[in-house]
Length: 298
Image (cartoon, rainbow, N blue to C red; front, side, top):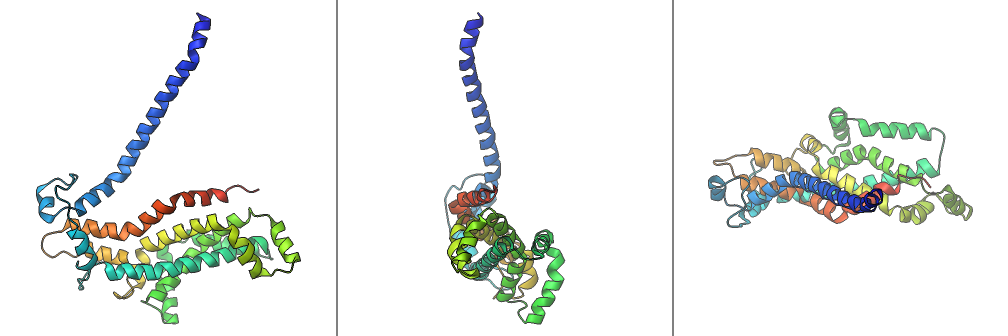
């Protein structure tokens, strides 16, 4: 009997493993459905007509798919006094986000490179002060930043918003690159220095080619933060020419003339979220790889 029980033990373990795997997958599917349900409702609602929304259920699938709400949200919906949709604000966000991401990424890379491979007296103190900037709330810098933008003469403009996002994001980008570069052997820099390479030659020819994983992390992080920002946009953008898409989306949802058009609101929300969704779908795996690439030294 004892030998028979021992022979059946591997089979029992296999069955327990199968049941355990089924249970884990069931839990994961449950959580996926929980997180995806709001987006499914948004997409479904945006593809319905106003009449179908009034007569049907909120979570029901559209009986007849129509993209009229998407066209309305893009080019005709009112975002306050103007009724030209999200299109101009969408391009404002692109004009703001792309330079801000590029500038903050390259400056963060230079900072991380200097703090790890060209150590100087007070480098740790400087890094601590930069790191402190990662924990400063948005609301705390609104007044000093508005005064600075006024002194520079770029208040209420797209260059002003770019400067705000670069300054606020620099602490994060420096942290990312510093933690990544500290894992790269110092012997590479020493060998290049002996061969006569200077600060920027080593940076552009050695460090940057090795930085693809952390560059992807920084670009995804910065783009997401800048694109989704509302507080800086509503505080420092004073005109349609510089307001980002998040501000326009808020105005569109809160501007009601007659019957509330939920399909247009949902379509506008999806349009505003589309760039970040695309980036995470296409480059999400690089984000995870980049985060783990600098997590272990050696």
